[in-house]
Amino acid sequence: MSGSVKVSMKRIFSGAQPTGNIHLGNYLGALRNWVELQHEYESIFCIVNLHAITLPQDPQLLANKTRDLARIYLAAGIDPKISVVFIQSDVPEHAELAWILNCVTRISELERMTQFKDKAGKQRESVGAGLLNYPVLMASDILLYQTDLVPVGHDQKQHLELTRDLAVRFNRDHGETFRVPEPFISKVGAKIMSLGDATKKMSKSDENASGSITLLDDADTVRRKFKRAVTDSGTDIRFDDARPAITNLLTIYQLLTGKEFADVEANFAGKGYAALKSELADVTIEFLRPLQERIHGYSDAELDRLFDAGRVRAQEIARTTLDDVKARLGLVGAQARGA
Ligand code: ATP
Ligand code: MG
Image 1 (cartoon, protein in one colour):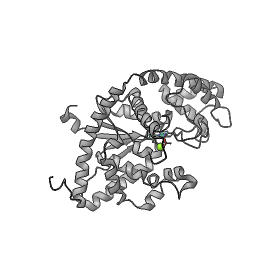
Image 2: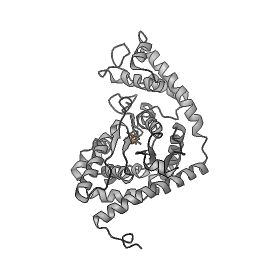
Image 3: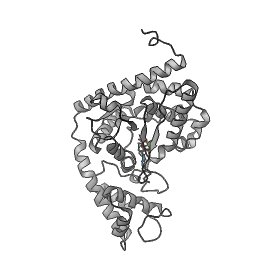
Image 4: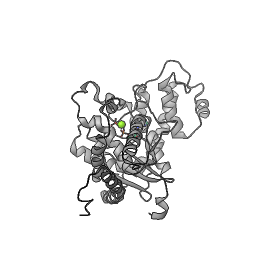
């Protein structure tokens, strides 16, 4: 990495949790944009395993999923020569800044978060405090890297707003410390809906596995899931907010083919839902095939090198921000004494 050129570039930061199976929503809402933006921005992509443990995880599975997710990042087009990829728990500054920002965040701000309400559900009083504090850890992830732009799906918009509020509040009280990041949320594809329920987003944590097309699904599975996908009443196939299930299928088709809205609608004019589902399955299978072939092409040793280099670069930036934060708060420990 040629330092002098990179330093002047604006920076993006984003991440995904190594839980469940990465699906088309994650790809179309987030990963796809990371791959594009990495050429214009200094790019840092994290595997947010500390976020994953806000809900119970099997330790061995979590470890395996961490590597699987890195393989998916690479297979989807993240270029390790220009982007940093690292594991969140390798850089303890994330947890340290999260504690500090917890002291700046109001409980009422966290209780308002729709993701907390959705994920806590009826167990609101008994879920771990980590689930409530999740957005504070996310704010720490972003602010540690003096991030300019955060490419995420629509579901993370509210968390990004909190991140900005915390940065502004901290800067106001303690002097200019954090860059205030902007969200990058695509106009199309930022909220891919479940195939089983078009009022819910496609989610890794959805217990209904047939609601998501995962990036590892084989051709038969893709066909079966689209075949069973819910549709709306009516027969014509066009984008229409009042018909969210069909609009969702058309959106996936549009993004995977790169066609314009009008061309997509023209393609399906006079055809039935069965044709839409079958053509959608075809383009999805064709899209997934090369990606799936690449996924197995990365050795464990290669991933170790990626994670080690990523940790070193990430920590270098994170340390600088955290040292500044601590100094501003009067947290004078060994580092301030020069020890
Ligand atoms: P979980 O249910 O465990 O929270 P998830 O599917 O929401 O899983 P995350 O790892 O939390 O996945 O999110 C990774 C990225 O994918 C985030 O930027 C998020 O906004 C984006 N994303 C998640 N679901 C969708 C979706 N249905 N459509 C578009 N983007 C999505
Ligand atoms: Mg999520």
